[in-house]
Amino acid sequence: MKNITGRWSFNEDFGFGTDEGFAEFTQEGEKITGVVVYTERIEGETPFRVQQDVEGSFDGTNFSVTGTKVELLDCEKQFEYHLDTWEGLLNSQNQIVGHSYDHHECYGVFVMKPIE
Image 1 (cartoon, rainbow, N blue to C red):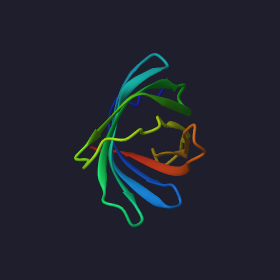
Image 2 (cartoon, helix red, strand yellow; image 1 turned 135 degrees about the horizontal axis):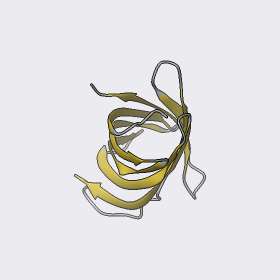
Image 3 (tube, one colour; image 1 turned 30 degrees about the horizontal axis):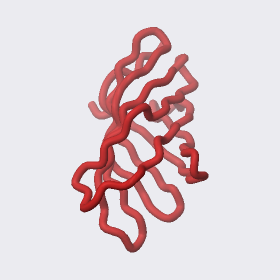
């Protein structure tokens, strides 16, 4: 089975903004733990950085992680940030491509590529 342990570039478009950063995963069997760190740019607002601790699974093809803890970095004021879930597939180009969502009906499309 393919192991996705390591650092991945992360880019996401959620309609009214974008996220850009990296993800770092550790895989043991099918279990994934790690962190996703990104700069969030929302139209008309000051960009800020987000760090989400994540847990989930990867079976060699199907990828799914959900935020367990969030920290807002470089943010002028703290506010409630909803944890995300990212679900996707590892494609033949060695990219994880999929969609994301949170509990407030914010949906996005993301691509992760390994950083060599």
